[in-house]
Length: 363
Ligand code: NAD
Image (cartoon, rainbow, N blue to C red; front, side, top):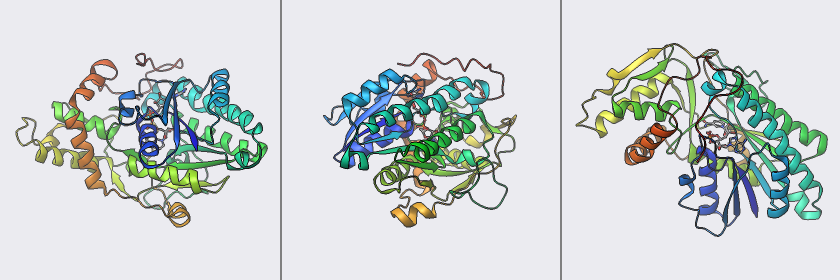
């Protein structure tokens, strides 16, 4: 079995690649453009394995994709490559339209052409697994949870671009018969997440004694999933998910943003008894809300649990501690990211322009 993982140098994609090399006997081709969010050091534990290969390719480049499919002849594609940060999509939607919509379209076409050329058992066994988000469903009030049939109501340029990609994947199945499966997951956390996202930003700012920005009143609710539980779910869905179906992935772990930030502060107080910034909660600063900020996400993953037997292994408290320890133990990595790629400044107030967010060149 040989699988192409797109976005395999990102936060979730690299967890999937490590899982596949360490826990299965599959061959893995990591296909990634290496944007600001990518980091090949995440692959160091597996990059020496003969079953692992890296290809620097943009999913918008049709010719490069076709050459890659022809050369590697994969049995499956796991599609994770995307621009992934809501705030950046507010400041500069262009990159999101390009990579998430045009890129998914281009990848679907390259996969379809390759799949059309397969025959027999190989053709029947081929899968295209598209990885998406709960944000396509929009925002919930205080009650209820998203199910696979919940209508799409995306509110940010990011979620709209992911929703468009989900629709394209569905259409390529219905129209052309491409054997696809789609999964929509909740907010991921864990080691190696780029420090523009809530949990790593809060950890790094708190350690440095900088203010901890909390949008609005901090009462927005997110449903948290450890990245390693997600990686395990994705491989299960690729292996055993039914063609043309969607699967929601959630660990049933709803928390308000302010509760998460307070918990990080409390754990840091404990782990860093000599820090001059204790109690870290003093650093919390309520700042202007994100435009169009979704109030609450929560997902029902009964289908995944019942059909495929998945269950999360991480308890949120343990996962958060493990994550905080990773950032404390990898201060050199975090300092390098802050110096070279993102210094922690506020994003997402809509001050950008349609040409896309300027980000430093990839490695
Ligand atoms: P990430 O930003 O950490 O990584 C994305 C990766 O995709 C990077 O390595 C980047 O270089 C690559 N990439 C971007 N554009 C590309 C292009 N045009 N061609 C090739 N590679 C490209 O993102 P992540 O958090 O790991 O998310 C992975 C996937 O999971 C995304 O599709 C995202 O929408 C989805 N998702 C993420 C979360 C989350 O909480 N992080 C939640 C739900 C769904």
